[in-house]
Length: 563
Ligand SMILES: [Zn+2]
Image 1: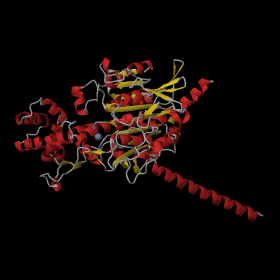
Image 2: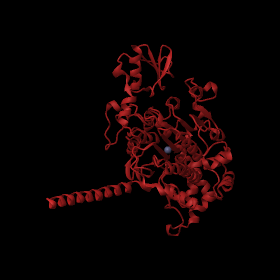
Image 3: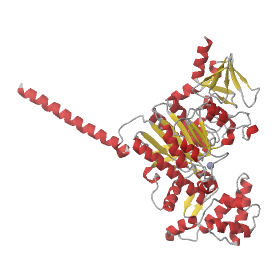
Image 4: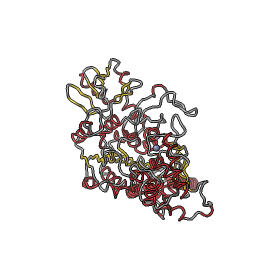
């Protein structure tokens, strides 16, 4: 008897010991994936996505040399992201944002709608005819459904591809009227960028062709609207739109001199976090360093590295918040590479084995403006005397007659390929890079390599991911499934109401009519007996398929109001 009890006690002790070892082991492996001892907080409260548009790891290297010390991003580097889109192994910005905002690959130029049937790579299967042009729910829309505050920050116009992809659904990224309208009716809590002209109708000095005054709509909704850094800094709570330029904001290198009233990307990020973090349910924020991509297209070294260093400052702001908060997932990645900058190039007179820091940084130290600013100074005098004077003054390089001839030939070549860009600025940048620096460029467009992934926070992703995975990771971290949000937000109207009618008598402002109800396209409104009811999602029209999508909210409200 005694012996039996002893044996049982021993067995129990043995089992407890095994359990302790197993738990300790599991705990250890959890800690491995979560830096700085994060607990297994999941889902997290906040997600911040930050996109240095159009760059790759080579720019991180260059920026570190230029700064002379480690970047904030250096401590966050954990993996890479695949960037191809539905119809090409090299993505455009609109298809890229669709991937990481919605979890779906799509066609070039499409913003958060499904791909055309014919636009698929051999390795990529089309999601089916029902998905063609269908609006795809974004992580920002999902965050809103979880009662979280939402914000978008960029240095382009607010309706430019990357911010737009989180808060609109259109089949062409250039439809700025429709995009801005949808973004206004998405009820974002914070929007900081450029692009004021897209809020106002042409009759009031804006760019809108539909006669709408969206600034008035914002003010009627109770938003504050700010246009300078000072006005922005005075806001301490509530919902705000800040558009700091009619069009895009200034390049960071030119901001303090030519537009000192504009906030920096880091200042906008800081204010956005301060405002959004007051929501007890948490927040979703996307911050884009928009112009890094444009500098890549222009092969403009100084423009690219200074905008990237400012982006790193914005990352430091977000990282400081996440570190203190401990309940924020920070995901940072470019949408694609652009220009394919290399450190070292085949035509340089400098052997690779003798490249000093001074060879790398020396030319950049003398560059005070972007190449675009140099060409703007030329007026129409493109002579050797004038061009060499400006380049000497602003970039500290005395070009030869041979350089000048090379610039002339390249300008003509670039203009032939693309007549919408400043071909002279591109040619200057390219020739100076080749003849006076150790930097190479293989393209003046996007390129298709994997891009770096920088992350921080609970259960941060580490390794190689597809860009679509990042939307799924964000949704999971915030505690929702994009599949559910899609079912909530986008019901094809014809499937529920076969008798619906799309009234296009006002071509710029179509209205969906269901019985006596009216649902204006691009808004979150249902009008019944002259009274407007707010919906939790936008009414979206796909012109190619002629389908209209409405939120489940609208269906339920119409059924209730009918009774
Ligand atoms: Zn681009």
